[in-house]
Image 1 (cartoon, rainbow, N blue to C red):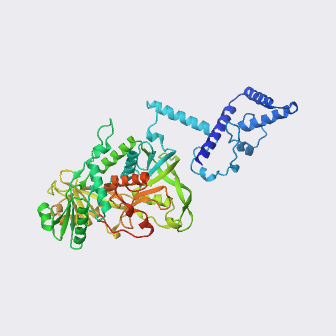
Image 2: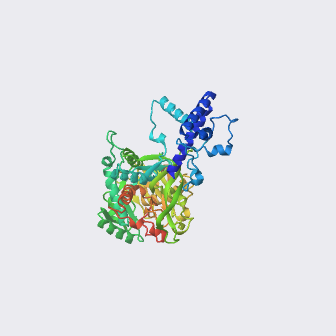
Image 3: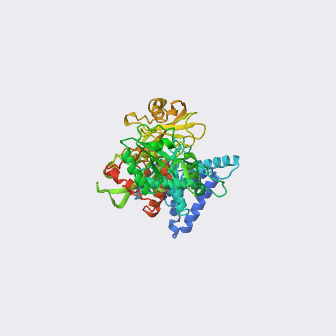
Length: 572
């Protein structure tokens, strides 16, 4: 269908150019063209008695081809007949859409609205001249990647350019630098509202699922070797991710102690360096911490801490671009689907579909259409919008399931405590769910706490509710660290979790209906520390059609379709 549109576009452009040229020609040229057409017809005539009639027929054909070579007074064609013969190629063969079995008006409704104008050739030529002059004024002759805009077709289209999307693009091009054409579509390239740049930047291995432990261990190793992984020849060193190796200290009361001990056994089996502390040991190692009500604590000795999310994102993006990935500033409007022969929906006994065309809107409002072979949804908190565009929650069969990922707003507060803990203060996770860690030097700290279900804030904006800090966060921190009673609140920010309301675990893997789609979303606040591992996992699914390093099959779509949530895993 795409080739058909291009053919129609070429033919219409040719006809319109003929209109423009013929309207500015003189009457002498008209006579000369008529004589040329007559001479051509005479050369093809085989019988002398039909010479004149063939000449007349040739002249009528010439009228159809040019549509305006003769003056309006001399033309006997109506407007309907004139429009009928506009789509004529240089070979003189008219195109009749009614006789084309693959023709459909649906393709034209919003895919190429800026092209199908009456004088396409002239408008396009003027636009190109203006763009060239603008570039010359800037001292350039070529457009930048951002100025070129949306590509017409790619092998892999990644929707979402945060830490997950950038990691997927990086690992794909690292593994297949020449065989795959990869594009990342991101609607906010400044990342002012991205969950990646608004996170607290922590990484830990203290999980209850083996997959999460292994993913965090891989990310820790990636961070330690980030300069080697993300270095670009002749571009200097990549951004410093500022990895601060300081362990998490997770505190448990009587109701949480047994689970914390069981999780610790699994972490040791997986190779994580985590220690269990009694209340006395915690008080000895971290004297600022009040251990009242604490039964046991877990402390990460290695591969835990925090880092700069913005620096890691910039490094991954720059390296991916160096490898050939296109980052496109565009917003997804819709998808075009088509039936997939030989594949059936088990519930409805209908043919499944593939989504190979995405409709995009560029920043200037221009609507573009891009064809892709494989699509990856890594939109984080906005993944639900993509699911709705694909029909989830509103169709029959598999797509009748409501997609469980939605945005949830979380606050991060910054305060200063002059007489607070020093450089040895850990990333503290209290038994109440409140957390706190040091931010740089000078007595600065950041903190937060996930609200109860009845306290969930509105997600229409990113405004910060400072009363929540005063009532729900500060009292808990002051009780756990007495030095925090005298603090000065300096500010805060808000960001979105891609919250999976089913079980707060990610949805990773191939789509159950659209077989050319993959998903990597629903991390519920932990996507940053798992980003590099997820990028490698999706790369393995695309290239090898299986997981080669960490098997993430338990996070696929099956539990969503059957409504079987996994056990929670120390979500903060």
